Image 1 (tube, rainbow, N blue to C red):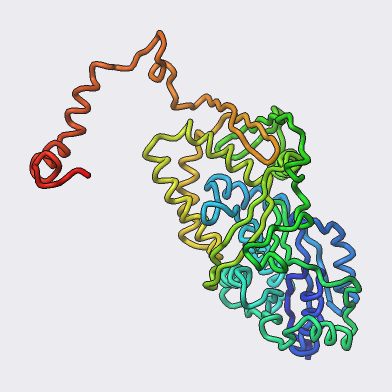
Image 2 (cartoon, protein in one colour):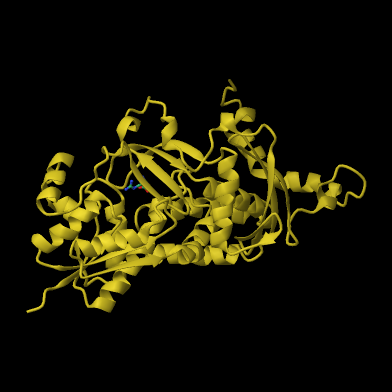
Amino acid sequence: MSKEKVVLAYSGGLDTSVCIKWLQVEKNLDVIAICGNVGQDEKDLEWIRQKALDMGAIASEAVDMRAEYARDFLSKAIWANGKYEGVYPLLSALSRPLISKHLVEIAHRYGAKYVAHGCTGKGNDQVRFETSIRALDPDLEIIAPVREWDLTSRESEMEWAAAHDVPVPTTKKKPYSIDDNLWGRAIECGVLEDTWNTPPADIWTMTADPVDCPAEPETVIIGFEGGVPTSINGEKMELLDLIIKANEIAGRNGYGRLDMIEDRVVGIKSRECYECPAALLLIEAHHTLETLCLDYETLKEKAKLDVEWASAVYRGLWFSQNRFALDAYNAYTQKFVTGEVRIKLCRGGLFVDGVRSDYSLYDKNLATYDEGDTFPHEAAPGFIELHSMQHRTWSRVQGPGSGLQKID
Ligand code: ARG
């Protein structure tokens, strides 16, 4: 009888390499290893694909997911100014549902009964993978070998690997746990686990050290259409290329580093360092343009929904009724978020320098203190009369004017 099949999200690292063998040995499954290109630093996916085959995977595919990632995921993150706890632009949280979608499609193509990932039981990524996979196909079964096996120390994992012909890294254990893609890099563990330790200089690879950056600011103009960036310095480009370029520009000016205490889904706080030059630059520019093109009520409501959007995506609920509904709200609000934002970057700082739009709600004639003022000054007293009506009554009955309350 032929074996059942499992589709594994494969990164080429030690954990997922051991997974390939472990799924064969312990679960008696045929393994299909998938390496997704989401714009991570590791470019040699062909080598990783071959490594999976060498370890006995019956098939292995390297899938370029970058254009889809930019088009269907990152554009929505920009719409929502997506930052978890107001800080973290969700780079890992956004890539997991994308990878999950491919895992499910590939499982269907191969007739696989199982999908597997290499996440531990302590992180958010297991939640994102499994919630996404279940939402897309509730009948697929999920295996999380790292959560299941008892190879708790790195030594025992290396021993198991050596005993089963899994190539073990000859270099020393990497001092950090790193996840990276187009939207930035996440660095955790090692010395960062002491929240008082300064992040060592060697954790940063996408951003220059601000003290080494040119003192002269670099100006960059981001053009948007319907809330999505479409040009840099007047040059039109696909979102994927634009993000790559924005990473370069902001990165060389030392912009995009974060160091935060983050609240994980599984109830723990963790210290996370991120560098996300393009993500932070584009979200900042986008939100600036929104302040020009959206009215006060919408900005106020959207700010609340943006918090909800980021929290839902962080918690693995990309494929959910709520996220789809929030994006429907955003689709409407973004219709006229078209225009340009000029930004200056200098030594790790970002300074908004100008904004314009054909759909701007800013009316210079209403705002000006100079000639040409069309503001109806005569309407102001009547407005204030009504605006303060309740407060005058309150003052007389309960407040300072009633003599009941002491003003201190
Ligand atoms: N704390 C971030 C998040 O949950 C980053 C996770 C990075 N993942 C990793 N395997 N290092 O989104």
